[in-house]
Length: 126
Image (cartoon, rainbow, N blue to C red; front, top):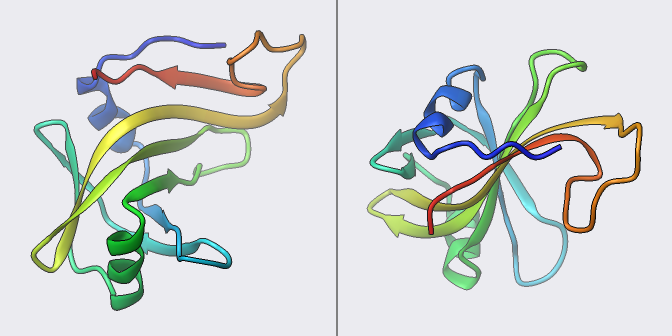
């Protein structure tokens, strides 16, 4: 199921969660995950105080994902994909895709290009 949501609603969605995991891609190997606090200002996500491994990964590959885990198993996770840029000691992420996702099986086959589970697509401008 997909429901378009305007970018200002991303902040409302984020407010329901306590923290996010930032996922970055190293040159080889498994993604690097760090728990972090994220703020939204003017349509851009901001993260303060990233570590050296995260910084090195961003320098190599700016595509990132942020995952806000659900508070309980029957709730949705918030997943945001975006392009990161270093900003002083921190990071800014321009969102390119956002979805509320729950891994409950879908009762019917998903349409091509749609989420395969119980998820809600958040439309972002651009």
